[in-house]
Image 1 (cartoon, one colour):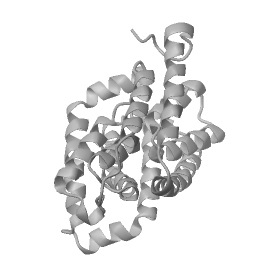
Image 2: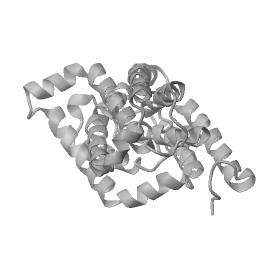
Image 3: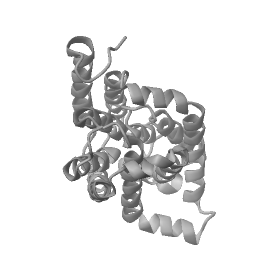
Image 4: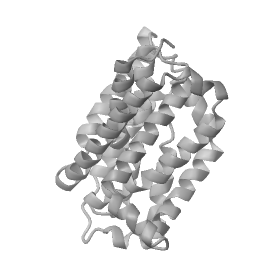
Length: 270
């Protein structure tokens, strides 16, 4: 890895914050940009810093909901988060080594972008339901299903927000509630993943990361994450996600072209 510069950190932070909540896969975009910048050393620790910055964005946007959980720990929303987080954690821990290998190689990136687009398209092809569910009517089974979708999104270019919003729509949530619950459910997942990665980092990693650029990246990730959350809630209440399907399909085809023809950035598909 070349030394992480301030501008590179800001760009990566902006990309992380934006794509964490837009249904286009933040981890997939980070793999793309890190390969373009030639970033390898300390990349994992920098990813942790950026992810924790996006967690701050979630807490700021939904501070009323999280404050309510602190006041009433046994509230309906608390149990929904528990039911949604358990399958995410089980999938993440059980298949972590497999996911890490896919992330490191980038071999499946193009295919996964295309899968993300298909899921978004199928979710938007659903016929609108009569009397869709609001937050108060989400069941524990709904939350567990959405949490399972979130667990599957640990794959590098499978969008977490895309799969959880799609899963929410499949379970009959109204569109704005689908976005809000997706982002609230991301908080324990982001925190848990960050703590696991920090625990496994070698001691030398903290000294090899340039902390001032990392701070710039964290600020960029927090600000862009906040804006992305606000944008998606408004978008889901007024429009649909199909435009993102076209975007990730195009991105996936470009990655596949590189894998099959040019072999410049990514390993061969097979």
